[in-house]
Length: 180
Image (cartoon, rainbow, N blue to C red; front, side, top):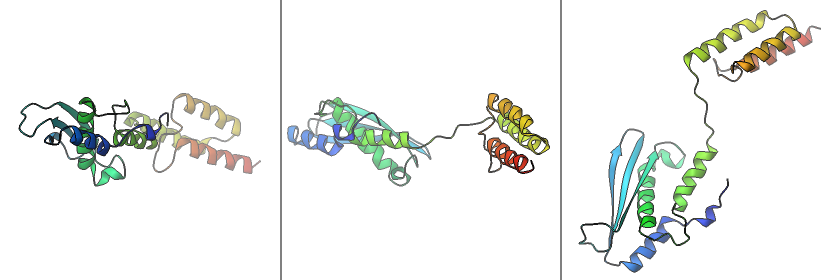
């Protein structure tokens, strides 16, 4: 992680400064768009409860289940982030960092979540076809050539039926070496 979470403040701290400055103010959040798996919200802060125009607004998005926290609290996290952005836009980010600590924690969670590459049907079919050819290879030298071609084609790590071409080739190499 290239940043220190201690350099970012929680939205709660921004809210405290807001309420100190505007004890008769108000905050408001609203859903802009919600699907089964994501939500987009806007947060607004007002100097006075009666004001029609906000001091500032902020927008945030969350994806359901994108982290352990977001399995159950994705809507609440989005609301907090939207309000945190509005407070930052309104000048309540004392440390000079526009993102809140909660937003940076979200970035950290996403960075820690390994993303599996998406493969096309054609790539999966090529990997499957290659896997079916491995048992017919009768020498380690031939297997090495096959491996090089599969590597150049980007087929080695494509998951197929709980395995990969790389694993199948490794297993076949062991079999061939054991028969020497």
